[in-house]
Image 1 (cartoon, one colour):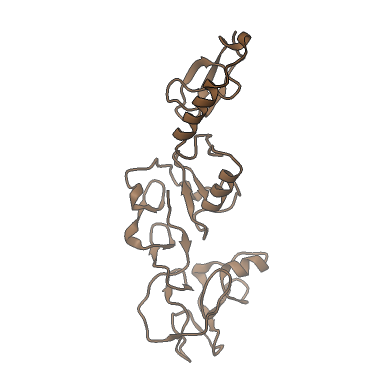
Image 2 (tube, helix red, strand yellow):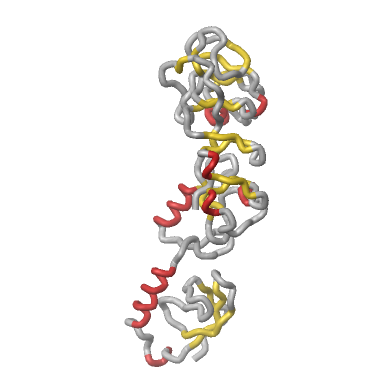
Length: 262
């Protein structure tokens, strides 16, 4: 389920300036350097600054930029006042940041710019972040969910440039962390243990494997009490080493809560 990812620009009118030769850093394409309001040093972007310094740059406090072409230090704006080079195809006068055109828009409620297009996203007031329009009325809200760090890498989600993945339980992971989790064979939300995607096909496969792998005679009548991580039901179900199936929702995402009974 896609979430609008963080960016650092929004569309502004074209002032007629030409873009300089492709410039910038690994994070953004731009033709200027930012003068950090904290230390006065010049960096291509806040991320480059934060990687080198022992403090973070406040993007909202940036007031001056230096043209990468003519090196004129000037007020933050989209076009160089001296040589008329355009610093970025997109510029946000709130975030004071620049980038190439990615159909960005500034979300006042998120407080930052997002990669759009705007018409394909909406701001969920309870989750307090922008979500794809396909999720309007079709997701589980978790209050201020993006203000929590990613439970996999423990890094910020709300302002991250990495797109977030909305799990069925409503929790968020970085999309890259979600993909890594899948590659390792993990399928549960790290926070609540709910299945991280639709597992019906996998559960059907487990049904077949269990049917083809009967337990030894002394365990064929064994039962165990489980709790289902997907529906929270408590059930007494047949014991099997391959997995215990929830009798309420059919999930194998379960944990036993007591010793096996024969």
